[in-house]
Length: 360
Ligand SMILES: *Cc1c(COP(=O)(O)O)cnc(C)c1O
Image (cartoon, rainbow, N blue to C red; front, side, top):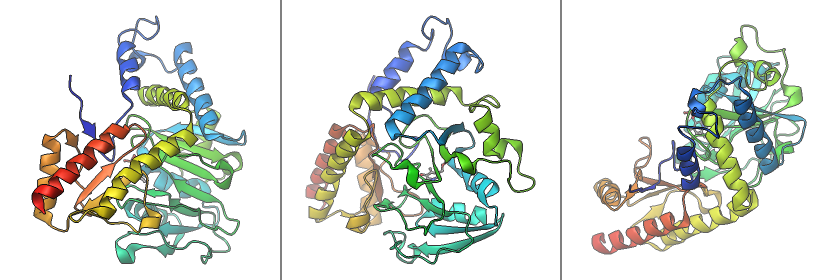
C-alpha cells in the first residue's frame, strides 16, 4: 500500500485513522455481522451511529439547543434552492457574491424571488473579500447569504458581514470544522461534507429552530422542506448512512485531536508554511489579497501556463497529487484541509523549492 499526499479540493483527504477503523469494521460492524452499508437505517445500531454523530458535532461546534442539526442529501448545490424555498417569505434575499459557489446560489435564488447582489468581488477575479461592514441590506430581506470560504479562489471571510439584523445564511462547505464557530451569529450554517469532513453525498445543515416551518413557498417538495427532515430526525427517508457513519468517526477524531481551537492552530501553522514560502518565492506567487487568504484552499501560479502544467505533472510523479487549479482559474491550488498532515505541506514546500531552483 502506498498513499500519496492528496491536495484535492473535494472529495478530499480523510484522516488515516478513520479509514483504518472503517476497514476494521467493514465485514462485521461491532458484532452485527454486517457492514454499516448493509444495515437498516431503522436499526438500533444505526440509530446509535446517527445519535452519536449529532451529539459529537454539537459538542465540537458548541451548538445551542435552539438549533437543529440535519443530515441531508443532494449536495451543497441542492441547498441553493432549499434555502430560498424555505426562507424567502417576502421573496427578497441579499447575496454577497465572492466566487462561483455564491454566484450559483445567487442565480438559483432568482428563480424564487428577488435576489439582490449587494456586494461582489468579481471585478478582480474574486481575489478578495469586499468590505461588508455597511452594505445596502434590503429592509425586507428574508436573509443575507454568504459563501464563507471560497474553495475555488482561496478567500475567506475573516469577519462576518454586518447583516443589520437580518438572518445570516452561510455556506461553509470548505471550512467546516476548520476553526471554532459562533453558531448564534447564524440562521443557517451548512456545507457539503466532502471537502473537510467525510465522504461525498451529504450536507450538514445547522438551522435555528424558528426558521424551520411549514410556511414554505408554494410547491416546495416534501423532501425539500426542512421541517420534514427536522421532524424525522434526518430519517424521513433512507439517509446517506455511510457518510453519516464516517463523519461520526471524523467528529470523534477531531475531539481526540483537541477540538476546533486546536485544529485552528494546526491549520494556521500549515497555511503559514505555504504562504510564507509563496511570499518569498521568485517563481510562484499566491493569487489572493493576503488579509483574505483561506487556511484551507491555497491557489498559486507561476505566471506561465506551460510551467504550471510541468509543475503539476512533476509534483504528481513525486507523490503530491491533485494540485491542478480549478478549470476556471488555471494555475495550481493546494487544498490543505484538517486531515492533511503538516508533513504533507512540508513535502509540498520542499518540492516547490526544488522546482524553483531547477526552473528559474
Ligand atoms: C464544493 C462546493 C459546493 C458544491 O457542493 P456539492 O456537494 O457538489 O453540491 C458548494 N459550495 C462550496 C463552497 C463548495 O466548496
